[in-house]
Length: 113
Length: 114
Image (cartoon, rainbow over all chains, first blue to last red; front, side, top):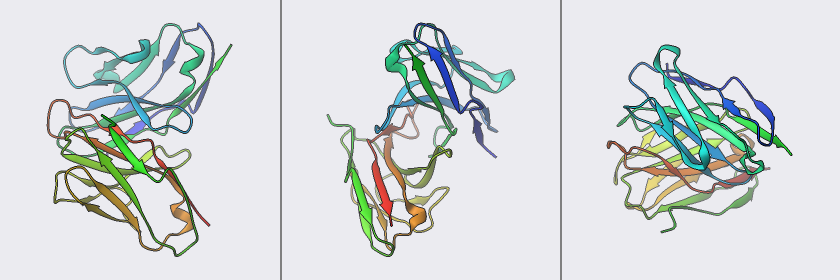
């Protein structure tokens, strides 16, 4: 069965520090992988996606993620966090034509000034 | 270009009341989706419509019905609301079946059932 695990429920980092949010997936076929961000009271905004090719993908707002097939992981990184990055982050996995995305339970990021 | 819009933004219902959540997209997407978001559970798919004229159940369809009115609009109906349906509901759309199969989300409807 397909599943997405985000092992960290809540992460706190200082502004300017680096960030890594973990995502592990279980999926039988070649996955399509996504990271979304949700600010309080808002909808989900796409940060980046991986379909194929280069396993290091760049997204908006200075985020990047690396697909590691051997570890079934798609971790999100940012070298220097800004206070405006405080939000909830969701990892999702899907497959073209499958008409469904499976979401992780989310990681809430708090940024300390 | 508004993307995906949802109405209403907030709603409070009493148990047993009915209501319809509206969703529209202006991106000419073929596929549309309804999710619910509950604390600690991420998003779960309620129903989806792969194309105009078709609808299919997702992970948690019980207590809901949907209508794909046309290519732009996809509504979600609660016939007899229950407290367990208190949640935040998100509509999304995508060009499923292509290399750019990415779902775009609306701002959500926060529903409370008393």
